Amino acid sequence: MQNTFTVTVVEATLLTPKVRHLKLERHDGQSLEFLPGQFVSFHFPGEEAKEIRRSYSLAGIPGESSQIELALGYVKGGVASEALFTAKSGDTFTMSGPYGRLILRDETPARYILVATSTGVTPYRSMLPALAARLNESKVVILLGVQTRLDALYSLDFLAYAAQYPNLDFRLCYSRETEKESLRPFEHLGYVQDQFALLDPSPDKDIVYLCGNPNMIDAAYELLKDKGFNAQQVRREKYVS
Image 1 (cartoon, one colour):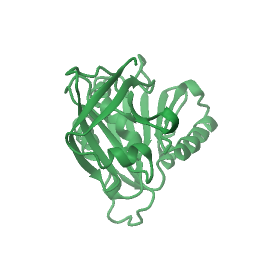
Image 2: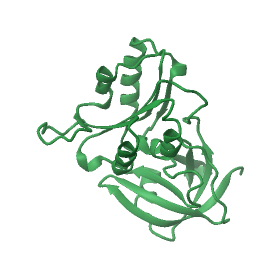
Image 3: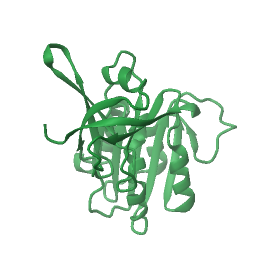
Image 4: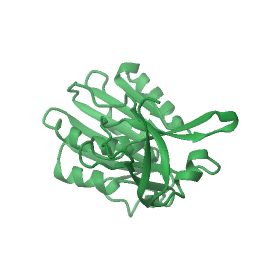
């Protein structure tokens, strides 16, 4: 099968109580060449010899390591979740890829507004060096929506880039936190799409990426359409459990 290969788990760590970070290596010793924002698919046997595939965005930086990195949330009873969330070093899986079109294109908007919920932020982590290279011409705003502080995956990576690059703005949005007094400057209460009221996205200047929960994506897209955005100006990838 084209682009299909076997991988072995070399490291598995918890990023949050609900999200696990995996590092895997290919059996053939090759590196996986991919573009930031792409994903891979795991292949699992199903009933009546049918194959089940589950896809996860790549979290690593292209060319930085031969290992394949990804983040996965736990879905009770899920074919992939039950296998991957309990995976340990030495376990093997069949994988294919890379796939996907949620990538950076050759363009220079005034702002990239990258919106995500939970593991939907994974492709943006992969994009960080490429985004940094564009900051002389475009500003970047990364919005991550999670339920609580405990669910904020990869936030230290985004904060490190925000501290280094003034044109990169990282905002963390909590849908289930209530204490306003303890919020740090990058923290906000409410849904991630609520930030549009503050950012005032412009279809003439901005490009928006949406990745994660389908409900967030649908709600955010409706808000953007009301502001005049069309499908070409909003790149979407839904994470369906």
